[in-house]
Image (cartoon, rainbow, N blue to C red; front, side):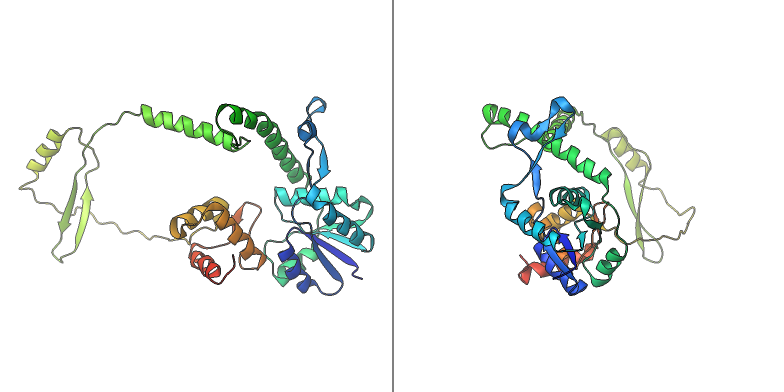
Amino acid sequence: MAKNLVIVESPAKAKTIEGFLGKDFKVLSSFGHIRDLSHKDMGVDISSGFIPNYEISTDKKDTVKVLKKEVKSSEVVWLATDEDREGEAIAWHLSETLGLQNKETRRIVFHEITKSAITKAVENPRDIDYNLVNAQQARRVLDRLVGFELSPILWRKVKQGLSAGRVQSVVVRLIVERERQINSFESKVYYKVVGQFTNKEGRTFKAEINSRLDTLEDAQLFLQKCVDARFSIADLEKKSAVKTPAAPFTTSTLQQEAARKLGFSVSQTMTIAQRLYEAGLITYMRTDSMNLSNDAMSSIKNEIEKGIR
């Protein structure tokens, strides 16, 4: 029986990591969150300072039973969930639910599923980051308070099945405000003059005057004055330029580029990104950036065509 129990979120990730760590380690998956807010009284004790009331999710009771059994027979438990708010919260929920306070427990994180990254993580464990845990709890409580209050109003006043919450409700407000700004905008017509020139060597280039003309009459008068004019280059300045490589994708820019170049939906993009991460093909950082260059978009498409979906 393995001395070390490693708990991750994804079963696909578990199989890969177990192959890296060897026979002394057993890797199991929590299949995401094992606890959530109770549905009784919104799961939040508002009168006592918004204290959340958690319960084991119905579909995770068997998973928790298996994990508790393995914890009892292991000497060390390694919590290897993702290094973000959700991952840190899952690690905390596991610690609370499995009674790991009295067990030798270590928290490890990694940004890529490779042997070197996993080995380095095991060599450098840390404690659970309660700042991240509390941030996730605050978000979840807000989701519950806002959603449970507003969604029924939408069902009664607009349409059944609609949802409101911490994010989409604010976004709708921003969209409305922006639309009102657009509707109240007063357009103004102006003219600019751009000339195309050819030098003695036959090279062509464009030049634009640095002021705008308010009326069509002003623009025509300016052009009329230029009919017999001769133009020359008064000064030529050369500067060195540095072109930096494209920045790694964030979640939002990855979704935007995948939609623009490949026509993918948000859910499709994130499913593919998760599977690429679990396969060790891309990395992610806690800043919500993915170490995936723009050139890798074709790689994502190739993975889909090979049947990664």
